[in-house]
Length: 436
Ligand SMILES: [Zn+2]
Image 1 (cartoon, rainbow, N blue to C red):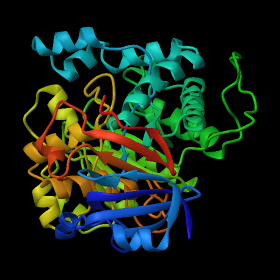
Image 2: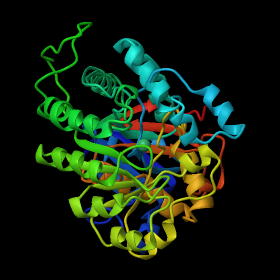
Image 3: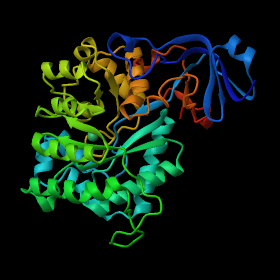
Image 4: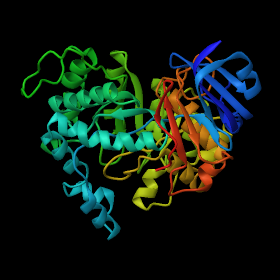
């Protein structure tokens, strides 16, 4: 049979295959290694995967990539990013390393509010251009699908502008983007001391406009204008933590979003345990993210639920903290763990999933195999795309990366350089033959 592209003779081809849904508990260690592995692609999808001699016996293609001495695995899925923002907080980083805490900087009106001001002020094309540069680097480091949150607008027009930026980037860039509405990311300065009133705005004004997808961001006008291609977020998220939103406020936002048919996510237990993890399980959220100071009871509860735990080790690293998600306890209790960058300008400007894997191995004590499962298959499930991407199986999108190394354990082992040589997105080679 004819294929469009064949990758053959991989030293190791990691399928991360196995039934439906995420891998849980001890199954996370099984990445499905095929030695001298190959796969064939037609119309952007995988049509064969197996030992090279078997795939080449059944398929021929005009383009054959020789992966001798290399590792082939699914493209990374980054299931938690704040990719779209304007400006930077390099000055704040300098303050922080000199001793100021994240919460002190936030309480003094800096921190996230400076990004909100810059993002509100940026024209759409500028916002897209700044974010595209980051998305290019994500792709270069092997990310082929990413979730992207709003939450630097914190008013309807600016949140719609962020959704428009996500839609434009998704349309223009090879990386597939999954939009999440995070209107409840922080209480904006103009609502200081009136968090409940801001939650009213999110629930009564923003969510109805955004979830119904009937209005979009106008081109230069301040009023709402019909958007020819409205983007409706797939998920709604809330930052449930000290200095952000209480458990009750978080519940209001998520229950309202659920009524609109949106999937649910939550930032839980990054700094203080407020019960967000238990809430995520109760409401059937697709994921609970951060989980740094989650109680052992809630870790157990989460592990036994269908909610995926998303660990973001770049964030404690970025803050110079020493406490990380208790991933071993979660996996040993049978949980499904995913990894993400948390790419954002305040705590973690990191576009690299290989670096996140290196952190997860060291500070969360994952094996390289477990970390790869968490960054591919389980991450795809955490954004609702487990049937489409995240593993190399017949019928799935041909989202594939080729590493310059011959043993997958170099992922995790090495850090600070990029091991990703070739990136294939929906069957198209979008980065080729270089590790720069
Ligand atoms: Zn986040």
